Every structure is written in structure tokens, then in C-alpha cells.
Image 1 (cartoon, one colour):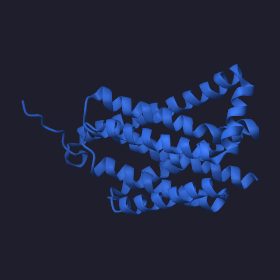
Image 2 (cartoon, rainbow, N blue to C red):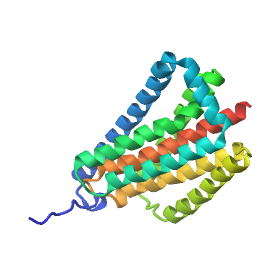
Image 3 (cartoon, rainbow, N blue to C red):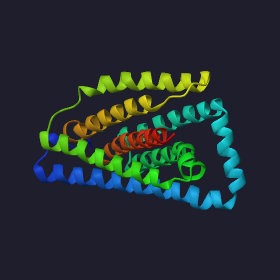
Length: 239
């Protein structure tokens, strides 16, 4: 029996397109809640079980940049696998496995930065502020796309090139020991904002109506990137 792919959201009728968008953002909300739950478990349960060992591990990672470089490499590999599972059009279970794997990977990559804010600086308020700013900026960027209906696919090559340049700066900072300061964080906020415009535009113009899991993964990745560097910028501004 020949398999017929679902139509693009832009080519579907209004009710089907609206249902696809609702599923996408519902999955994004669940992914964000899962991320918060994992971080709560890490800092509220695992650290309380062995605070000395947890702190020693964090200080070791922060003192030795090459260990963090290994973590970054593993994260990139896991991210590639998660995106492949979510986007390859396979079974729904495999797509959900990709989304779940990516959420776990993002939660782990955030641990050192959250440790600095919550434990080392004892300033949970800055995390809450970063979360509120991220949600407000995300809502504004989303509104721009949905109200204008503009196709931001032209941002794709720009985002790809800028991402490789940013990755080069991050790797060089780890190897040569210099600090990426507030200006770099602000530049990454701009990059993450462009990615949100691009991903939201793709939801309207590029995704099929059966790709809500993959669409939510793309949005979650961009929102997580934005939150990471908003938090970093706020921490830098407090130094």
C-alpha cells in the first residue's frame, strides 16, 4: 500500500492547520515542563543526596575546560541523533524518543550554568528573570511571524554560518582559556531570536501537518538557546 504524506500546513485547510499548530505548541509546553522537572530533580534531589560530590564534580568541570569540551562534543552527537529520530518520518515512538532525548541532553548541558546561578551565587531570582525575559521575547517573535505571515526561510543560511562561527569562538575559548563576555552573550541572543523567527516561519510554511513532534523539537532547541544566553547575559551583568 502506497503511503501518502500529509500536506504542508500552509496548503491545508484552516482547521487542520490550526490543529497542527496546537499540537506543536502543546508538545513544546510539555518539553519545557519536562526540562524544568529534570533540573528540579537534579538540584532538588541529586544534589541533596550527595552535595559534596555534586559540588566537586561541578568545580572540576568549571576548572578544566577540556572536560567541558568533551561534554559539548557528546551533546552535539546526541542532538544530531535526536533530530534524526524526530525528523526522519519514522514511527511516532521514534519521533517522541528523539524529542525526549533532546530535552534530557539540554537539561544536562544547562547544569553548570544553573549551578553557578543557583548554588555558587545563591541567586535563583536571576534564573526566574531569565525565564520571564525568554518567554516574553519568544512570545513577541512568535507574534511577529503569525501576524505578518512572512516567510523567514532566508534566515536559514545566515543562522547556519553564524552558528559555526559561534561554535568556533566557544571551542577556542575552551582551548585557549579566554572568556566570552557580555557582548558574545548578546550576539547569541540575537542568533537565537533569528532561529525562533526561522523555526516559527517553518511551522507555517515548511512543515507537514504530521510533523508536530519535529516542529516542537526545533522550537524547543531555539528557546533553550535563547534562555541559556539570556541567563548568561544577566550573570555577566551582575559581575
